[in-house]
Image (cartoon, rainbow, N blue to C red):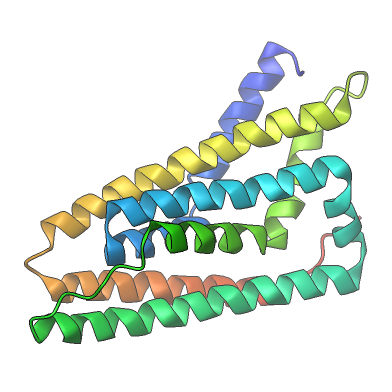
Amino acid sequence: MPDPSQLALFLAAAFVLAVTPGPGIFYVAARTLSGGRPEGIASSFGNGLGGMVHVLAGSLGVSALVLASAELFTVLKLAGAAYLVWMGVRTFRSARHDALTALSGRIPPPVGTKRAFREGVMVEALNPKTAAFFLAFIPQFVDPANGVALQFVVLGSISVALNTLADIAVAVAAGRVRDGATARPGLIRRLREGAGGAMVLLGVGLALAKRPAH
């Protein structure tokens, strides 16, 4: 493990990156605004599991293989981008549909925590930029004299834990917004549409992302 000063630097950098908005945060916000805090928290843990996929793959060298291959990187990138755009469009359309349903006096059914969890896993696991981040960021704090793979997993798990805590904080905050705006369905609709639009933009940005140089 890195010395205390290096570990403190790692924690500070990982915290800043955890609170930086990305696909996972926008998905958690959209899911919470749509189905409430339980769905948002479930999607947060889904994002965490998706992040651990990249940590374990990175420790085994799989992520390095994907990033080294232009074809594999492109396939994963386009799959992740398509999924984000699809999720964003669906979030945008369901916001309008649910608003119309609410006006008719009916309550739109929630998607449920299980589905929110599964979709959270997919949002994070299909993002090759997460793999690139772990492979570029974590090795700076790894001591080559000790078990590199184990250090990678430990530091990666810490980073994922911070990301998950940030997602949960977003779910709690979005839940409060939702609770405070229950009498203003138009506001909830606009917030959900904004989150959906942000996911579409992130998906487009991912589709245009270039493979990291080696």
